[in-house]
Image (tube, rainbow, N blue to C red; front, top):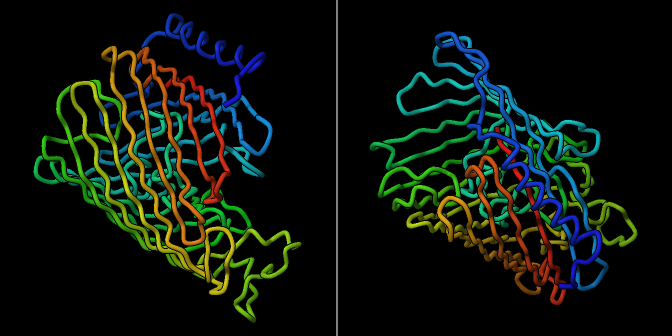
Length: 402
């Protein structure tokens, strides 16, 4: 990668210095602050701030960079009645297009059953351990293929989500039935929530479930080892999504073929309506003695509405998209300084070769995950399955959670 000089280098140093000053200037705080409580009634406020610098250095083009709020997410949670609570969270950093504010969590939840929660609304679909691990608890600045909603993993979706535990939390489970949307970009398999809808999103119904086994006691969805006690988990999950045919904007109703097929000048040529998706996951994680390792494999079988479509990830109207990743960290200074690394791969039927990414990074924890600074250097090879299409990226992120 080319050296980062001038403004870029100064910007990286400024961000790191800012994180150091923040550690001195801002007192420690637990996530969420209860501002009112009277018996079962309460109101809690909280949020996360992620200030990120990102530089991209492709082999075939010039270096670009930007500084942004990767996530700027306040939330309000509260209850008026025993066993019921509600929460809504919005993002002013990830808003796009006409959505000046992107809705994230927005649900009501019933906790009256022992070891089980029933959530109604827009919440995490129960698939992909890395996705279910909050962005604020990640070893690397950005998620890998296996946890990214752009590459097959469902996003937050609008429906019913049941989570619970058995056998003293050695078994945990999740079941979801939801309305879910797909942004029909043929280079990706991009799941989105119908709450932040766009006019060309394919609409559909999705059901799925997961089961995780924790042989040494419950291991929560969080990367990094602060306890130094041995914990491990292995999980499986699956889902099925089916287009309800309410919004197929890129397919001709009369022929069932893509409207831009065969016309290289058509602006819709990179769009393909999706007919169905089935997904499978196997994942695992281990923590202990300062080490944190996560591994996951995803497989998606995808059909386009047009059975002849052969662009992007599709070949003759369908594709099998496979993602896998392993990532980990080690506390070289307990609870303070962690080195991190990861490897991820994606393949599709139309790819000439696998798309791979190697990552290395370092994390400094001022107050565990609540207040930390991260740097990740990611080396991408054969992007989109195209041989020689390489790109290196730098991510520098400061995070404050309250």
